[in-house]
Image (cartoon, rainbow, N blue to C red; front, side, top):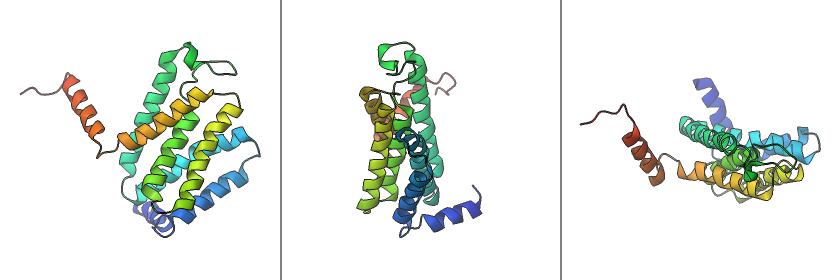
Length: 189
């Protein structure tokens, strides 16, 4: 990450400007989106995790955030592929790869990071971010792309990956220990 980009992010995500930056960005996303519930959800699924990543970069935690996001994406798409034609993976409008809702997962992942890290003690901004994530999930149901269970699974996966895979979490340390033991290339000693 170049220093110029980090300085720009630090300007917009300085403590006193964070809430305003997030609120304005969400307003702009809604303002430029064609008035259609599905399109709002499409755009918010990118806006929320991107805003959270920018805030994490400004705080010097961008790589760690991105690593958790990649794990989330791997689990998300692995689930969709692995479940194949299972009933839980079938979308209401037909087709498979419906479990869990990827739009909801990404939106909740970003919203959780924003609420817990970037927007502490900013209840109005937190409420808007949570509403945007909730709307994203609702838009998937409205569009017939997912059912309530697929959306709720997306909520859980996004929240779980953001909160419990953080570098300071006990669960993450346990998972790393398990994978280290399973590594066939590790040195035995």
